[in-house]
Length: 248
Image (cartoon, rainbow, N blue to C red):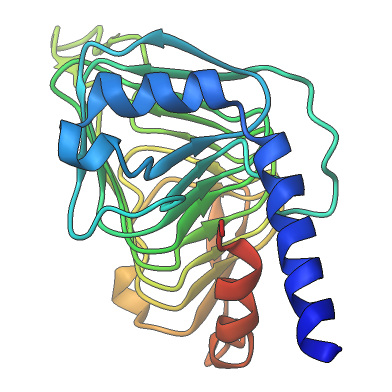
């Protein structure tokens, strides 16, 4: 009887999942951007409304291709109601080194010749925006809260009126492994964080924090070192985190 109940609930869960999938957009993004061998396994799953405005670039999947490896519009946070404004523009290269999640209402722009790389189990929370014009990389288990804004560009060139020097607009962003970015954080060019770095809510990050080593808490506007020898309990959460976010 217990086995029958288990199978029943597994089947019920799978039916609910399949109903939530946007099958038209899922099939489109896979067969548009991936090789036939990869695409037929549907590694990229799209939930809800999502607009693909420009797919002239490429998506690179490193390693094994399997169903549900990448979730777009995935409802894995507390608030699940979506506004229906997810938008992806990929003119450059979007590279996945493992599994990844994009929450509801995410907006992602990867410009021409730009490279955006996500490590295994990296994620971008709901209602977040990412603009990559040069190079942005997220480490393994680099997880961002909702309403994050990350951009490697200042968008408009600035000029030194005394020397006539034109300052560059774009600077690389590199976030380490096992980073936890809280809600409403702004991440700008030149940002570099070490492994096991935690960023407090409503912070602005725009410089290199790797000199402080691992297990640090940073925060503020602009961000500064707040505490050392502090990290999220990844070991205690890892098993439940992987299970909860898995598309199966």
